[in-house]
Structures are given as structure tokens and as C-alpha cells.
Length: 156
Image (cartoon, rainbow, N blue to C red):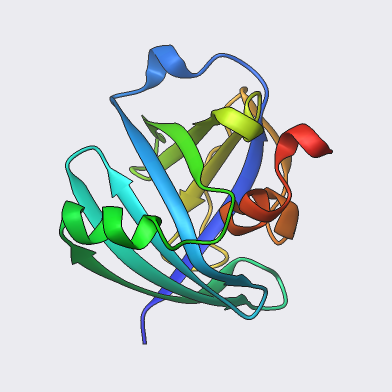
């Protein structure tokens, strides 16, 4: 079964000049319970449905299944999603060992929040932490998109 292995961090500093790509994302949740989430995402000109399981004890690894769908299908599914659709700009910043950081700059009710994630091949895979990387928030539900859709950053 496919698994996602990632670590999440707050962002504290300038990173945009290092980005090699940026795009907009709109996403909503058909289900956002802690045991599983079902996400609909439109990212520029592509769309997908993603199912994620609960994280393991460390919060670093969890089941993930994703399938591309049409933009029209995604728009129709976004109409029936739970309240709290997320809007953000994603920046891709390369890491020295060949990995990439995905930095999300949130908009709307989550304005002001910047979160970086790095996907890893194994839980203990080393990577270099740039100066702009802040505190680690891996495993803290309120920093995950499903958590932000239920409890936006503006309400903290």
C-alpha cells in the first residue's frame, strides 16, 4: 500500500527567492475525521482525489492514495465538501540533497500561516534544514490541512 512519509515545519524567514516553482491550490474535504481524510484538490490545471489514513505514532508516516480526476469533477465535489475550503499558494524549494520543500502560504481564514513540508524516502532519512525553517509541527493535527479546514488559523 502507498505511504506518505513527510515532516512539517513552520516557516520563519525569506524563502520565496529560492523557489523554482509556484502554483495555487484550492482544496476541500469530503471527510476530515482523525482516522482518515478524503480530500479534493484543484492545483492550477489538474485535480485529484486523495485518501489519507491516520498517522503512525511519530506522525511522520501514513497511508495515502491519490487519483487524478477532471477539473469539472473536482468542482462538483468541492460543492459538497465540508465547510472550510482551503486556499493557498505552494512554493517548491529544492533542498541540497535533492529533496524538495513544499511551502504553503495560506489565504483566507488561514492567512499569515506558512508551513513547509518535506517528503522523505524513509522516516529517518537525513536532510539539511535551511535557516528559514522554524519549529517542527509534524503530528500536530491543527497544522494539517484537514485540521485547518475545521479550525482555521485566524481562530487560534
